[in-house]
Image (cartoon, rainbow, N blue to C red; front, side, top):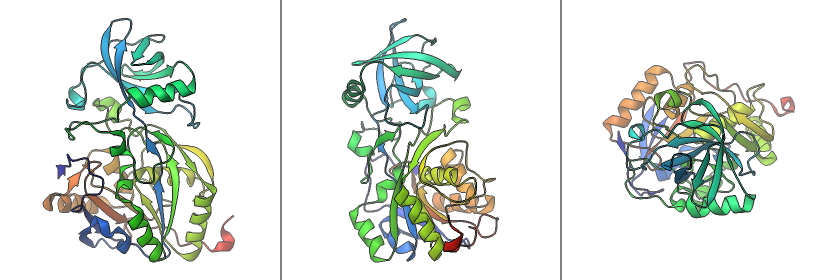
Length: 361
């Protein structure tokens, strides 16, 4: 597979590998996504907008150049811009491989960071010298303004040109709470949503604070994804109950939607409206309780995004998928090609039978 280097959200040649519950594969244009779905399906996408979460500045005590990448919200409250978890790098930027980035100066609680117009204090280290809890000082409106004026989208070396904020906002972007884009949503546009509606497919959204995909440090990368808050509207919870009652599938647009829905339904398979925090990894040992199919980017083995596909496909099918993607030169990363996978009927991951309406409370 080849990393897609052009920041184009809906390139005309984007492709889609479709893998159904019986393991059959076919290649179609990604723009044909709606035709791969069924009447009665419920499609759920993440409407989080992406923060300009990369901030360059100085570690005051040592006058050392640093980059701070916001990486997590410490609570489920997503409207307070004072507190974040962050990855701190030394000098450099996205033009270097993340794993080659220099470490920051030794950080201590109480250290001050100057990030453009923003003043930041290190509150605590979180078990690793590059992972810190930080606090922005000042009024919320001044912090938001400083992020907007000084911050840049988090970016990696495979995209050589600097990203603008609009490059990483999906067409349905709403609350600015994600640290990297919920990029499966790049494939959506008004034309695709109209096509879904014409086929009897229902569309809904939730908000999930999509986290970072790489820190460049193996110890930290093994912890990804970090805990990620989410919010599920009442309309979406109601739509899930209605889809189950009519026998429709729950189709997630992106891995963040899977994380949110499975966290919300972990207790009994029923998704209720409200806020929560998705914790831990979803993978080969996970029994899915809510999501029946997943539309997501083409991900490389070894990433947490790829591991999540193990909840839908057994190891043999995962290897077949990887071989098919490689043989057909699919493009990876956020601007690349995509896959649509159903739960594997042979692995115990098949959805529970649709609940009757009277059993849903």
